Structures are given as structure tokens and as C-alpha cells.
Image (cartoon, rainbow, N blue to C red; front, side, top):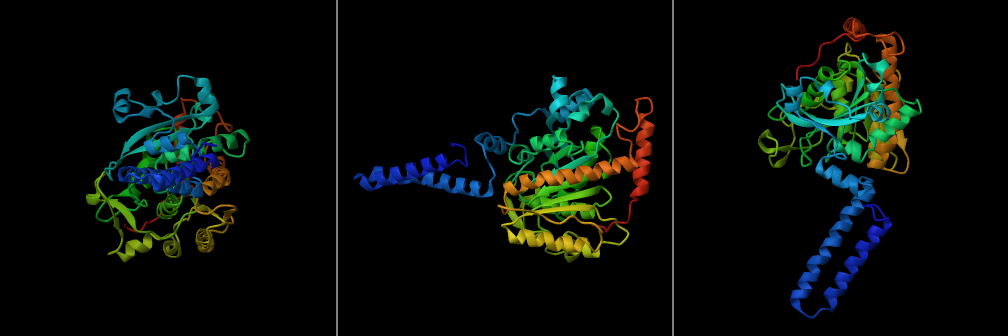
Length: 419
């Protein structure tokens, strides 16, 4: 009842505001009238913020709010770059001290990645499913799904607000999803920015970091497949645009794309002054002086002009029924996709919500079912899963090479537009 969206919490704010206004009216002394007016502003402001939070169904508990604003998810372990260099292997650090818990619930940790080309240094959350710690998967390279948050947002939002881990664990327990590693990067470098995962010709190379350097880091440091058909990318709101844009432009690195309440043409970005982290945000039209780059980074446009020798990834689209602009945008993009992809699932229209977290949480279940089923299909046809043939450390390397060869044969690299 006293949680951020609870009725009692709203009633208490109204009572506090009413009491302060009454004091303002009845008191005779000017100093107390000014004091009461200032205090009355506080519950009024909190009421407005809480109303917005309730409308978007964002923070459901105080713990989620404080954890998300602090950038932490229940004090998860952070593996620093220094400790990685000192210990020599990430594999030596992941997992809790209780192997039984890891095998039952998996493991969540954060780390810091510095992109060798973008030169961006950001936090990334990684969730390893329970199967990662099972003996029969000891030599198995998992598929991966990169999850992109909206703006304002950060990796912890997937845990604190979207509840992605319990949702995914329930699907795994019910055998409705297949195991995959979840990679959740910081796509904006700060709550005050909205970079839209774009490579600014004169600034931050956000797409390079999100679409290339983060997956490459995961493949190099975890038992995760190299970017390709065994990778998916998904996001909500701004993250949905990021997923659609990156999925189309880096089609050889992602086989599946999920877009929840996303848009399909870039908006005005809020970027740091001077392109440096921590700088004051200011509004910028990243491609204002480059029409060609604008068209390439507009999925609605690029899907109609993408070279015919590029294989378009599979797409899952979702939107809230009460936000008709989101629904129409998804439906329109689906029609464009059908010109290149024979089978595009109908848009998952979530009833009872608009552009809000309730819709994104609801769409996570069918999206994860659909995406992991597709990734598992790729494994069954082109890779060696744990249930097909024993893989021992003695010949694990040759199996990995065979898997990579099969994937390359099925999805040959194709010419990309120069960006």
C-alpha cells in the first residue's frame, strides 16, 4: 500500500498537501505562510512524479527505485578491469560461493568494458543462466541476447524494473525458453543522455560500442558464441530503435531482433558537450548535415533500400494497445519487413497499456520464447548442443571451429554500406 504506486501513498501525499495549505491559509504570520507554501510544494511535486511513475508503471517498489537511481541491482558483484587483468580470466571470478545456487538461479554480475575503437568505458550487466554452471554444458558456447534499455535508463533497469531474470527463469523452468546469456550494456553513458545508439560523425561512437565491441567482449571472455546467427538483440522504447537499427546494419552479427514500443526513425539526441562523458547534455540532430547517413540509420527507409544480398534478421515487434502511434509504427515496419522476410510474426499488441513498463514486461515473455526458440533452432541445425554429442576439453577447440564454419557457411558476410 505504501509502495510508489500504492493508493495509500497517494492519499498520504494529498493529506500532507491539504494540511500545509490549511496552515498557509490560517496562519497570521508572514514567515509561517512562506514556510508553509514552500513545504506544500514538496508533496505536490512528489505527487506529480508519482503520478507519472504510476502511468508508466515503472517503479513498483521503493527498492527498485533506489537501486535503479543508484545504478545498482541489489548490490550485485562488480568485476573490475583491474581484477580481470590481475586474475587473468573472467571464468575464475564468475559465480557465487554457493555452486548449488548458481545451478538453480544462475549468476548476475556487472563489469566495465572499454571499447578499443569507440574508446567508451561503460558498465555492462551480464546474466548467466543456470545451465552455464551445469557439467553437461561445460564445453558449450551459449547463444546470447543483448538487451538495450530506454532513455532515461541504465543496465540495472532490466533487473530492477523489467524483472527480466525472474521472467526468464520461469520460462526456463517451464521449458518455454532455451538457455542463453543475457548481456545488458549501458547504451547512453548516463541517465541525462539519449544517444540512440548512433555513431555521431563528429562525436560519440555509440553504435560501435553497443553493436560490435560489447558482443566481441562477451565472445572473448565468456562461453558465448561469436556474433552471428546465435546472437539476438532486443530493446524497449529508445532501446527498441537501437535494436532495429543495429540489427539491420549489422545483419551478419545478429540473427534475431526484438522491438518493444520502438520507433523506426532517429529522434533528436541528447549528447554530452564535446562528446565527453559527464559533459552537459545538449540537443543534437546527429545527421542534420548528412542525408545519406540519416537514411541508413532510419530503419523505415533502410529496409526498403538494404542491398538484396544482405540477409535481414528475424524480427519480433510489440506495442501497447493504448499507444496507437507505437502500434501503427510497428505495423508499418512489419509490412516493410514482409518485402524481405517471408515470415514475420504479427505485432504483439499488449492490451491495457501504452508506452509504459507494464507493456514491456508483458512482451518480454513471448519475445524471449520466440527468440530463444530461434537461437536453439540455429544450434540444432548448425551447432553442437550439450544433448547431441559429448564435448570434452580434449576436442572442444575442434568442435568450436566446426560450429564457426557451419555458421559462416549458412550466413556468409556480405558487403555493408560504408558508414
